[in-house]
Each structure stands twice: as C-alpha cells, then as structure tokens.
Image 1 (cartoon, rainbow, N blue to C red):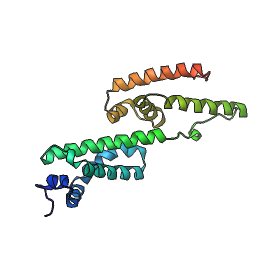
Image 2: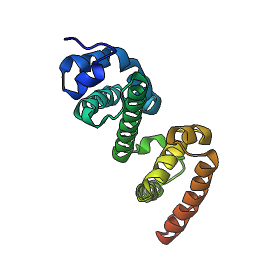
Image 3: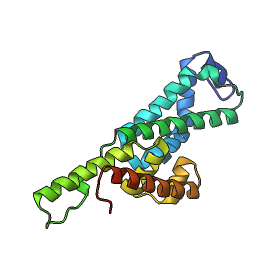
Image 4: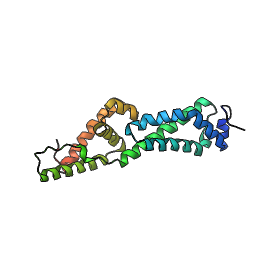
Length: 187
C-alpha cells in the first residue's frame, strides 16, 4: 500500500517510510518557508538545510505523539515543530556566534596602548552581553550587531515591540552598571 492523503497519518504512526516520503513531497514548502523565516537573516544555508532535515527527523521520531486525525491539524503540528526547531537552531547559532572585532572602527590617532584598552573593553562588553538572559541576549545581538529594528525583533521573537524596547532600555542600564563595576569606559 502506498501513502496518500487519506492514510499518510496512520501509516506514519506505523513507521512506514512511504508516509514520510509523502510528507516530504507535500509539506516541504511549508517547512522550508517556516525555517527560512527564522533563519534566513543568519545567512547560513548549511544551517537552514540541517534544520529542515531535523524537522523531518523529529516528525518521524515523534509521529506517535501526534493526536490529530486530519490534514489541517497535521499542518499545524508540522508548522509548530518547524518553527521551534528553527528557533532552537537560531539560539544555538547565536550562542556560538563570535563577534569579529574587525567591524569596529578605531580612529588612527590612538596609540597602541589605546588600541589595547579598546580591544579589552570590547571583549569585556561581549562577556557582559553573553551573561544576559537568553531572550535579552538575543534582542541585543539582533538590535546592535545584526541591525534589526525593534518591530522586526518583536515579530521574530513573538513578543510586543514595547517589550523589546523595555528590554533594551533595562539591558543597557544593567550593562552600564556592570561596566562601571569593571571600570570600563562607558560611551
């Protein structure tokens, strides 16, 4: 028997490979669109492809947990899996992201000692940002390193714009306090 629109859910739960192939053929655009929406700005095609594969592996491994019985509920279930897998990949990427100091311009009139102090301050600032709560850290990276607007950040993280603005305000204040405790020069 081959999977079709009437039996693919039952066959997937029974671990029939043709059901997974049917899902791949019919729902790949949904999964790709969902993953690209979250990971597209990262610009890592390998990460995006890996995430899409992880979504289908997760569907295969967790098919028995699906409680619906129709196409609409399956689409919703698949969308949620894709969205959260993409968010997990994004967070993992941001956690492992190294910020290159080459992007920060240093005026030519600085001495070697001044250059060293600026680099040390930048490293301390990166450590301070990494010590923030995960959501606040994501917001700061997206706002100040990736150049996102508050509205875009709110959409990506599924929070309100005012929440993003408040977290930025509070985060700057906390960073300023921590920087003063470390005797960093605050601009």
